Structures are given as structure tokens and as C-alpha cells.
Image (cartoon, rainbow, N blue to C red; front, side):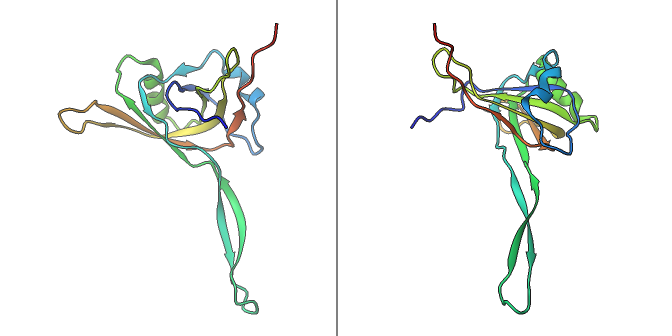
Length: 164
């Protein structure tokens, strides 16, 4: 079993892209190639993943609550960055917060096998907030952004490099 550290991961923001009523696939993000901007000085990436809403029903003849799965939500990814006023990715994140448009995001993990490619995650989100935190004297000023994920998370697994 192999585990991997989060360090070395990279988060990118792309251009405006609407979530669809069906699950997205990697090819849906191919038009973003020229738009990707790495968000610099990322300290924390938060979490991603689906959770189903609970639908409960209490039939009187069973004396036990029945539970069903409702809509799925990929949640909110809480991103923390050290503020860099010149970073193109942070500037794009701030600009995206000022709009009602959903944007493409790509997360590249640091888990590539030797000579291979790393895992990637693709999703569409609204930038719900982009606030600054200043804290105490011996602190780095932070940009805290909430990404409200409105699509499925497209998982691309790490792959071994081609043989010779």
C-alpha cells in the first residue's frame, strides 16, 4: 500500500464553465487548456467529494424510520493561500468571486509513479467567497476562498510512464 503527501499538489482555475445536468467527463474540460492559471501560495486545499442528502420517512406501521438518498452535493472546498497580489491565479479567483459564473477547476496531485503522470481532479464551482485573514504579528496574511462545487468530481488516476 502506498500513501502520498499533499505537498506538491497544484490547484488551477480555468475560465467560465457551466455545470451540466449530467456527470462531466475529462473531455468536457479540454476547452480550458489555454485558460488554466495556477493558484499560487496555496497552504490548504480542504476536501472534495459527494455526500447524499438524507430523505427520511416515518411509516406508522413499521415503527422505524426509512431513509433514502436524495440529491448529491460535492460540498465546499475551502482553499487557503498566502496573499500574493501579483499571482495570476489568485487574481482570477478574486475576479471569479465577483461574478455569478461557474468556473472550471483542476487539482493536480503529487502522486505520479516514476516517469508517469499524476492524478487529477476536475470540477466546476462557484467562488462563493474570497476573504482576507490577517491574524497576529507572526502570521502570513491569507486569502481564504470557498469553492461551491456544482458538478461531480472527475477523477483521473495516476498512470505509469510508457515503456521503452
